[in-house]
Length: 279
Image (cartoon, rainbow, N blue to C red; front, side):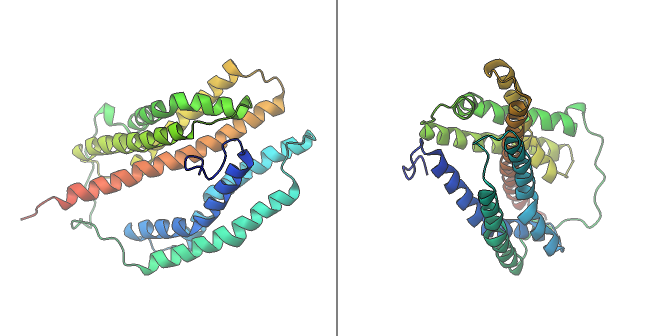
């Protein structure tokens, strides 16, 4: 919105309102995408996956936000979100987002399941012993470095804008960095997935998600470094607010980058296995 000129970057309230409205309306796509993927992986508990889609991420985000807002209320600060606004947010969530997730999920489950490009064995093969550098913990932590490196410089300006009350105007450059982040997450996830498949370890799905998603760990660590080097915050409540909001931002970043990595690996594995010729 800011890049295309729909909203002024100086109007932070407008940007936040637009973000919330888009998130609420995207419930339809969230339900559809989760149900399609779940059905592809032979899942049958459609109610469970729909409820998790509707409540897991928003519930954690709202929980953190509510606790932090309660702390601001306790300090009697004017920066606290009023109770009426909190009620309106819950109303938007339960009144629009959740029903849209259920509609999207219903439409997704009505569609036929996405078929695998090749036939798979009913009996899973034994995964051979892996080399030390293919250890899941090692590859996951290594995989997060490059995506974080792609946004590292821009992150400094964003944190300065948020915490030192400066206006952020370079949304065009931010959008370019976002494109670079998507490409980097996809590339690192695909490369490590390829090495994993070459080692005959076929359990790639959660690993591909965590590989690119681990960049959120570095984001949170950098936020801690920024706190101690750039900010002169002495109050305990202010420190809790900073780390609470950065935890929320890091969690959102984890979901975003993890999803990019998983979708890239799903596309990659379908592509390479559809090229396999079985005589």
